[in-house]
Amino acid sequence: MKALVIAISLLDAVPATAQSTAWLPAVEAAERIQAQGKLSEAERNLRRLLVDESLPPQGRARIYNDIGSICQDQFRMTDANRYYHLALEDWEKAGPAHRIALSRTLNNLASLLWDTGKLAESEQVLLRSASLQIEVVGANHPLAAPLFYNLGALHFRRHLWEQAERAYRDFLALHSTNAEPILAAVANSNLALICRRTKREQEAAALFSSATSIYNQLRNTAGITPMHLVDLASSLHGGNRDDVASEVGRAALAAVEGKFGPSHPKTAQAMTVYAAILRRNNRKAEARQLERQANEIHGNAAHMRASMQSVDMRELKMPGPLASAATQAR
Image 1: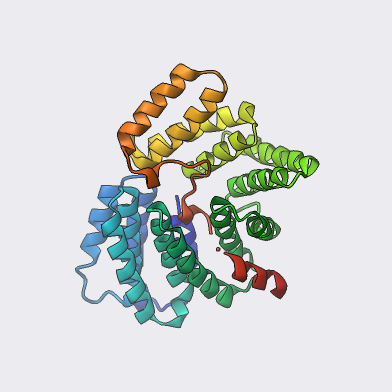
Image 2: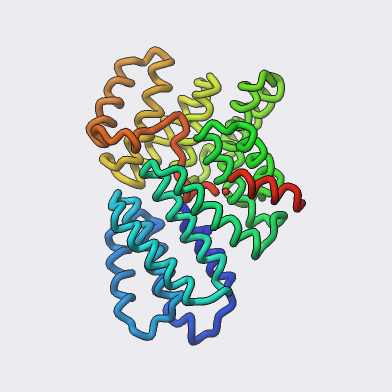
């Protein structure tokens, strides 16, 4: 999954009559196909549903959101942008009962802006999304945890260490162990990197240990989001934990390639991260081969090359003034 499972759970929480949700089983069936990585088949099925003139705004919005997500995974960024905006228009028509669902499409749009290097715009969209979700569920609700995770990821990438630390700690305070524990591993590892930057070595060591422990418990677990594994490998590599990073990087590359195929930009990101780990471990020939493959995939598109923190914003979640306000609210 990426935002898909979270989006489904939040959308299903919206009250609706039986008549207004007659479209839902067919959409859910297409989403299950999408979650299996059969993107073209899922898109065809979703597009067929759009011809139904009786489809309510919330049904049309959900379909547009799913098609946008598929387009983004296929690197059709212009199409993704168009469908996300169509979804937002219909969520607005659906009314205030669908604010959470609206915020999820905003998250996806923020991820698209992130993927195309528009970080300032991504932050503004994410702030709007976060405000809507906190308005509905409150800053103390477990559903708010992903917001703080995204906030931490955004600030971490922008090297705003104090804000990132606050957001990650807020996330860990709310995060349920039942909700994608790999996120807690990434948050702990990134917090460890921040602690190292501020000379808190003992705390950093404990956080790296927590991240490694969580990963070891998940090692053979199905259903881990592939790009979260890339995030964890990248973070552990940044902390010189290459013994663990090597294993995570290898698993991440296999998972990403298995989901997206050998020539997808996300596969290039995973290759780049794993190549950096291999190079530090003196496996330079293997590293060079992966780097060549990655360069062939993403060419000279610098904004799509993996940074040391190659995160997918749909798999994350929120930023500064809002984090402070939410912390004070608690």
